[in-house]
Length: 195
Image (tube, rainbow, N blue to C red; front, side):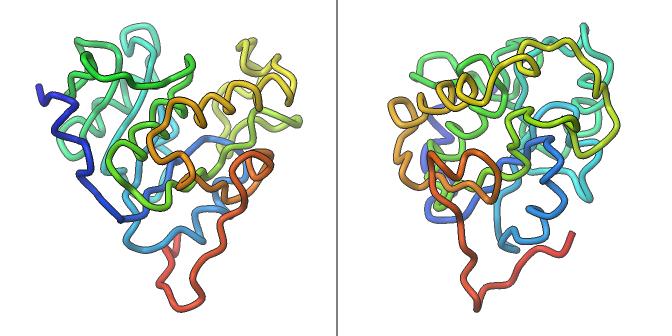
């Protein structure tokens, strides 16, 4: 298992995209810089056009079959990062990482910790609106996240300003987090991912 400290500034200056599961992900993905580090979250990675370089999750894959399938798909080609010590390839203990209870927060912190610039939040709709995911999985879940108001979700994300190194590198590609982190605008001369 790799110690987390070895991840510090691993991708210094390279863009990263945190791939959430919200309905805005397909349109956001089309605007991702071609050289971005893909940091996938939970079972959503199974619906992406390619596997990410990193898979980040919080829950126990033994309790969530879709997450177990994502782990199985990624464990040989991606670096798996989790608080679940039986499932992670990176030992997150010993560093003041931030997760606020959400995989997306841990993934965002990881992008900042690895020195990525910018750290782009894609598909982060904060569970607002009738459609929760860009794919069909469990749209009717009784998850606490689904019940949080927009203001409650934004309050959780304000923690990034306190806990993420170089948090000013974080940008939202769309959605409510633009209010907190500002909207990312691609360089008109840069190559973009065609998803």
